[in-house]
Image: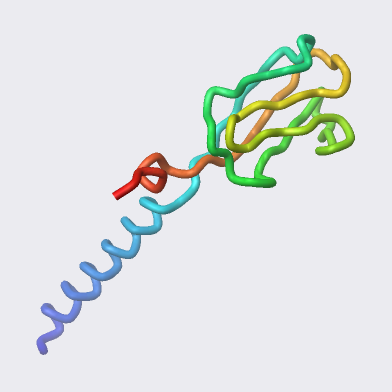
Length: 100
């Protein structure tokens, strides 16, 4: 095989592997919400378990100590009203949730 054909083959393999990585990669989401009502509904559902980070004034809150979360429904329940919070979490790409 010539060097030109070999380099085209490597480029093709690299392109396919890069596409598949992006296709199956989790998606990062972030929201700023007011938690005075204790129950918050996130914009997305089907969160990746243990991927969330919840901050109040740059302080990381502890799961099961400050809040609990339903990953499938995308709901967070705070144990006390704490004001505005920032939430970062990962979701599955929509095409991985489809049934074939």
